Image (tube, rainbow, N blue to C red; front, side, top):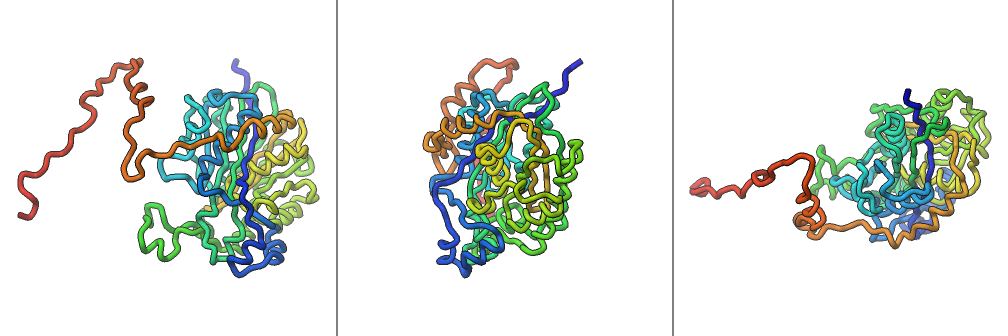
Length: 397
């Protein structure tokens, strides 16, 4: 009889860009002030990615740190999951770029899109791969570069968001513990209350969409915050109950870092003191899918999580998605320092295309791979079509 497989967090890492955008800085850009932002959101500053940084580059640094914390090598990873709503490109996936940047040669990789809930959704996917036996080690990344999608004349959104990345390694084990209970919900009735109107197939980029500012995030704040507060509380509670626990059994809650008032209301709804809630939104603002993994990594590194503790992560996002995972922590928290020091962000590079106006020629390494003998002898000579012949007579002549 096959022993059951449990999904344990064995590594964690985060990356925050160096550039800081304070509330005082925003006062010079948009009609707002520090007191208004702090009292209504709890945010004091946020990070802004440098010009050379991308979602992939930040995600790769966080992933490598998580892998080193776990005591693994990049090629030990079987699957790379990257949650984001700000991919480097619509294709290829940002996860594919991260795979190359971290030096992994064997993992499958794909993106997960559930907005601010994306990391929790990706974590649930990792657990499914682990417990089904399809993977032994999965790296789950949340990475966002939201500051390039903000209208800095809109004070309702430009004050909220920042850039960054966080990651965990989820590993298979026969030892009980790790991920205990998961709850996920989606309510599409709120789909257009947080959205980015243009850029997809419904409204492809055009001079019109750019002129109308449709490539910037839009949000109906008040109703969204009310729904987020309710659904985060109920989703967290259901995850805890699925774990056979009660809220009082949870040593630390790591909520999505969107708004201090939401976090305070969730704590009140669950009858918990605020010291059970981990908060770092004052430093980073809302980093969407990166919010929970950045907070988780910092909480562990700061000594807020110990072996045997019960931890609940919970998030809410556009599409009115919500997700929560309750964990029994089993990894040595002191290993976080290893991952942080082992990876210098300047040593991590995402390969750029050779030609922005066309497509790359086949790289030598890929050509060599295609020429290797394989288990199936597939004739390739007739696969590539020839150029179409020109019409003998111009059309309309």
